[in-house]
Image (cartoon, rainbow over all chains, first blue to last red; front, side, top):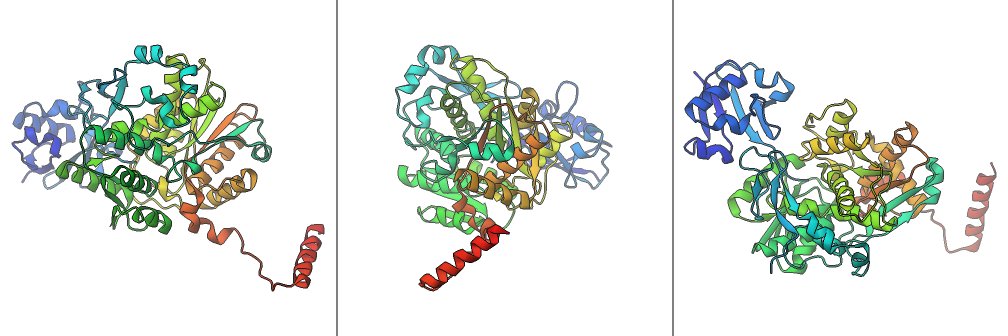
Amino acid sequence: MAIEVIIPTPLRGMTNNLDTVNAEGATIIEVIDNLNVQFPGIKERLADDQGNLRRFVNIYVNGEDVRFLQDKLTAVKDGDEISIVPAIAGG
Amino acid sequence: MSEPYFSSLKCRECGRLYPKKAVHVCEFDFGPLEADYDYDRIKAALSRQVIESRPKSMWRYRELLPIDGEPTVGLQVGFTPLVKADRLAKVLGVKEIYVKNDTVNYPTLSFKDRVVSVALSRAIELGLKTVACASTGNLANSVAANAAAAGLDSYVLIPADLEQSKVLNSLVYGTKVIGIHGAYDQVNRLCSEIAGKYGWGFVNVNLRPYYAEGSKSMGFEIMEQLGWKIPAHTVIPMASGSLLTKIYKAYQEFVKIGLVPESKFSVHGAQATGCNPISAAQKSGTDLIRPVPKPNTIAKSLAIGTPADGYYAVRAMEQTGGSAEDVSDEEIIAGIKLLAEMTGIFAETAGGVTVACARKLIDSGKIPRDEPIVLCITGHGLKTAEAVADHIGKPRLIKPSLREFDSLIEAELAEAAH
């Protein structure tokens, strides 16, 4: 078992064009660190130097925005689905 | 020919520069791209006299709009009336209030003609043949009409449950109207996917850096029409929050290039309580926008649950000492009626939101009663007629008889005497 992470189009260049990848970790930031081992450079696209999520990157765990959970420290477990979604335009 | 004024696109977050193409998001950190200008050159080229010598449209400020050549779409858009509303001022208990009346903007009776004329002029410069948008109605109307006039193919994508007249006002121009079973935010997400796949110019997706700048013209006009000064208070409806941030930018730009004196001003944001993600954030002192998953308000043109510029709108209010407010459907209808009865201007639901929020901000002391106020009224009431249809009475019906008319007037006088 692993955690499934859905990768948005702008980042697929870093994931060999995979739209879904598997990762491990107990929190969002651990998952991001794990992704960075598999796909070097992806972390700095998602988080700033201090490891805080970038303002225009939205991460959802099972459909819930992590900013309204525990942000980068939100706990995740095997079987969870994580989506990375760039903020959208419109209006 | 390439104009020197509009230099590049720039990420609002990290400042990376991008070529002036159909792109809207920074590849590095996904921050929004914004038009950047050479203000020294603009300052040298633009004066009050130069502007005043030009035709009365939004294009009199063209050096501050993001196109390379001369505009080709929407040449008559803008320069709508700024109406001093003394009867409204009296009812609201304030000294001086103005209505920036974009209900009569050309050609589709909302402020969206401003943004669309920039986006489509740029689309043509970029060689795009098909344009499109995600819309709550007004934008769809404007894209449909302006694309028709320019000879561009167009698609407009809207939530399936929009007001009848907003649907009709798109269809009539021969555009392809696609109704989506879902809320605006779902329409929007679909459009982001389509824009990448089909290579169309989506005015509020991949052309958004150009589109959004068009809103500045409303701010430029307000300053010029007030006699080249910034109003102390501007109340602005918020959907994505873009209009508020761009009016703020317009005020700053005129100061920067010396067209108006620097003065203290506040921008205030107005939302409907049934979809108030920006107002809720501002009121609770955070810039973290909590999305509204299921907007529920008669102000459908403001019903954006995940506002793209919410963060920047909250920041603009904070930086200028402004406040946000939100109002119920009943207050929106009362706002529409108040504006109509006091100024003769019939606004759509978003206008009711602006008037009702202004009233609350005045009554709570957040807008002082002795400083000038401008209300941005962005769309015409006939577009959302069904929202007020059951709240404004009915005509009294009589036979063509003088006797019947006399008794009707008698009854009315008797009632008034009570």
